[in-house]
Length: 522
Image (tube, rainbow, N blue to C red; front, side, top):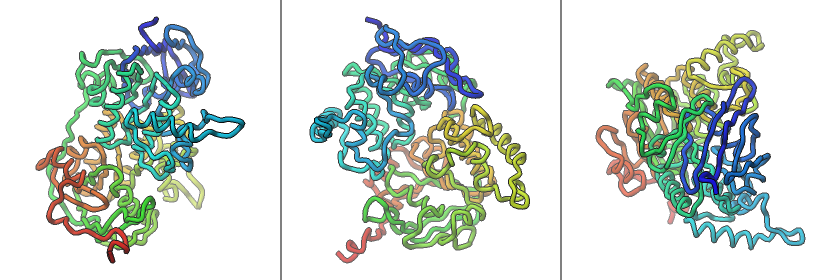
């Protein structure tokens, strides 16, 4: 039997205007975790999509256990024991967990689905791997981390033994990431083989056996992780040295830019309020970070500030003007920018071109329209400027459909659009999610430049490294309330974790707001 369970030999794949994979060879050993490392747009997801049958290679050969195979679609991939957890989950949001897991492989008799049989098998797998789920929960009502469990269980339900994880930690909390790493190690002990697409070097060093580096569609090399350093991998990935330290000059805080008083926002998932009587200020020349475990009200806080959700109570003053009831456009025009957490739902119109997306909030300005007619050449020139400045990679430049771009380059497009508006306040929610280290370094510099120009950044991040290095102040969120205000230089990850988990609370934040009217009268 071959040493390799999967071999992808001399794979080439071309799209209009771009060679995504250029003569790449990747070999996966039985029972190993093999990381695939590269910048955004390096060709990682394309290569794995070929293995999973979503694309067919223009050139090259795929072998399974030493035998050449042709994989035309995901059903054929599954038949060969190949499963994939995609960066953007492939789930039907209004279906239950159980329905999503069995979709396409429903056990049936006389035309009737045998759900009880499927439920029993699912719960046995769930218990075996410690992937606890609620089978009847609706996908749109569960957390992102729980949705990922559903995707993993889809693979295990189909008895796949070659598991592809495409940027699996991009939307997870630090606790969920650690849990996923343990699950992956458990899989390999059972003889399963894992291909792990990532650009997070610390995760590769922690969990991978070998690593293949891609850059601009080309194979750079395959290495035993124990024999290379983080710095060497980053240099191979980006093609230059990367500075991992965020450099900020000390500066005095100026006047108040954002003043939030007793803000309460309802939850869509449960009866309790998601944000409960929160008050804080953000001043000129500072980056304030909202830190917390995902699902503690950070999303709803930003929805309320940006105008995506109405406040139940409380007020928001921006540049000394009450904007509590202002529209999203009014907030944008007054100097507020928003990098949203869900780039597909709130950040982009996926079927618009890149250039159209880059002027979504400015197309009505005199620079881009005259007498009600769009000035296409001006928009094209502006888009080309941002593409160059932010290194947004796309096959057809400004006319590329946003949907066809890699997740990281979609993110760069949103960041470019929002920062280039020269905002007085930038709401940056997971701004580096899905970005490679070179892009992270660049985006951090841009956020610091907003701060240094005397403007303000309200950062929401689940990346502990980012939380500890980028902001001037940290506000810790737990169950919809601020429980601590910290300075990065005066705290550490362990103390931060205690506040994030609710095990600790500073005395000045002991005030609580009743979650419901019933609780208030109980």
